[in-house]
Image (cartoon, rainbow, N blue to C red):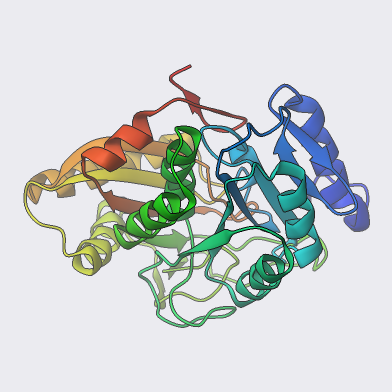
Length: 330
């Protein structure tokens, strides 16, 4: 294992300390328990948006704490769910008097711990459950579909509504809508290595790829020989389009996401290939996002996400945002 680390025990703590120091104008890191909040206090009367999950997927979720997105994030240890204590501490730190919306990816540990926290906090709360992965129905850590890269889109769009005065009920309804309108699927050329494990999560041959891989290295639909990029793109898009029942002339957001070890040059190549396929199907790319936003440590691979858009979703996607990992309009 080759990684920048001093001790596996201090890996997360040192990373959070560096993140907090680098972006102290936007966020504050708190310890025992570990939570990330905005550097400025929540304005009273605002619905608070809190998310979290295992570390190793950066910039998700801490990189999305800031104006127009999250009020707080709860980072668990690498690929491990955060504890209820973290969620309770985050809720107490940022609560604004209008309720709390938890955005939770569909993994058993995340669901259980966020549920426990929601029952222990005072005040109103709601949960949006993300399950956008069209690759498999049941997998390691999940019953039903996994929550993956569409989490980023939900956090941006719902964060905008909360920032502009939306109620808790309205934020919950919008979050569920974005999740329903989104589908994702990924592929990996290599595994990742969890520092505490010290060895790859799975093994692939030099000419193999994992089709439909999960963001923790969970098995996908199949293992296959590496194919040309256009063929990979067509299969990923085909599965998503079928799931979302996309129609001609529909407007979408196309999100090409890197898993951590894929160069941007290759991600933009995938975008080009995806655009050709979508153009042939008369599906209009109205908004785009390309980059490493929902990663799996150093995994070499990528995922495609499509979100069906309407005027409401476009408005909240375009609205100002200022976080460590995403900023525009300010």
